[in-house]
Image (cartoon, rainbow, N blue to C red; front, side, top):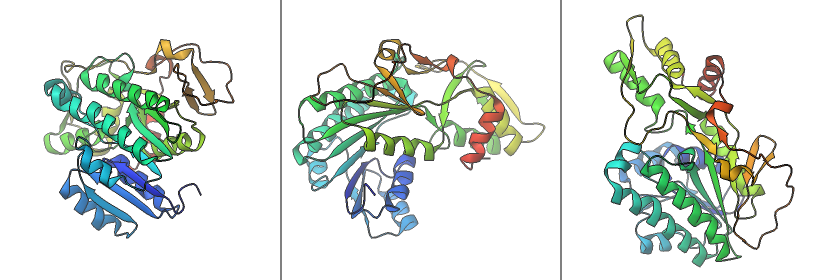
Length: 324
């Protein structure tokens, strides 16, 4: 087992990603999992829920280089999940988004290099592809910083994982809609044609493990997943949590929102290769790594219109994720 006896550091570790990742890591008997986040209450809740001496909780902010450097000492693997993620918040508080998503990522990278950790995984988002909002732009910069870090050291392999919306994660659309149905007997969709890529949390964690096992440093790993209409999601949640009077309403698109998303840009398509159900985007930069196993490139971007799936399949994912 890759993580047996190892020390693992997770920034933003009290979030949905961090908690599921911790659960999976503990099955491999690591020496220690360090949860680094700035939320005292969330850490107390997680500590009580897990009750495992192998987990160390560390209050800190990725903006604070000194605290981050001290916390990361002696670590083998780093998973970087900390970020400001809500599109409207990032649109309205630009400087805060930059401090966390860009400056914080740079601090993470600099500390990982100084401590010579083995591998560093940046958890990214499909919002980086042709970004229409500040959140996507900051995460795109974070991806660039992560890939470029491979040119600065041979001791640490820096790898990016990119995925769509994780069903049921904290603050995401599914719990928001369920809460709205329960409180208001109504749910709001911003546009009838709104489409998103969806993935369950366990599948998203599998992507992290696949990347850390296969990655040499410099790659972006993408899970080839399906896209769905948000209206279908709303209908399924109303069917499960609402009644015959529950309304589905429509509003204007919010600042920074796109109707359709993409997992891979047209520019990246020529450097993208398929490996089973995963897609690997190889870097343009000369990282000094050797990449084997390249097959025929994807040759095109991967937009949601090419991966549209059915309401039946979406229901299967919601059941798989324990959401209905």
